[in-house]
Image (cartoon, rainbow, N blue to C red):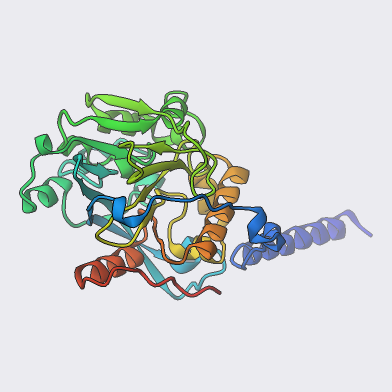
Length: 336
């Protein structure tokens, strides 16, 4: 066979292989660990009785949104459907303090973006601004000085984007996360300067999840020492992504997931985002997949607990409707 024919054959084969890989990236992916019995993956420690928990009010505050194809948010999803990713913050009123989980977007967030890479500005940062953190707080009669602290799930720009609206407010950050950020580790390094500018001069206090296993997660940190707010590590998206259990007497138990997933279907199926996005926003693939599996099995064991990711507009909206209608549990979604 002539060289020209060989080159054509090789080119055709490579093209066919690339096309097959591109198509397969939109198909569902099997997680082999799903074949393991649930009981071998997550234990179920005893938690305090509901009567011993305090009343805690929880509000999800939306600052902006990004529209993404379902197939990007959920591997195997439809290319014809669109999902809404929210950029927001959780306001928590606890008897021992009023605080935030993440910070949403500030009134000045767009001032910090022009110097970032073009591709970043037109993909992950291409949000529709709706309402600033400052505006949300004012509507609720709050000033930054009324907040005891803001707990940051992880140090990505869209989770510290509201810090400029919180002058002087203390930020609580997982020590593992802070060390990785300073070392410009994994997916944190791409927007290091942006995050640094957003953090400004706010005091930062680091915490360690060095407490015992909690609800099957390997370690914990009891924020108030009474079992009402318990932090657990959910690494992979970033090294120190931190989840938060909220145990309260006046409503359903909540489990805030940070960015361990984008939406509930990620842990229900389970499924990652599309591989191109997954690689971009994940600091450690194997660890992130294990966290995804842990959440999948936890959801099977605890359908009564509302598991809510920080970008999951659909679940947040549904939970707020349920909460405001005084029905105190969120029905689990359907699995594929």
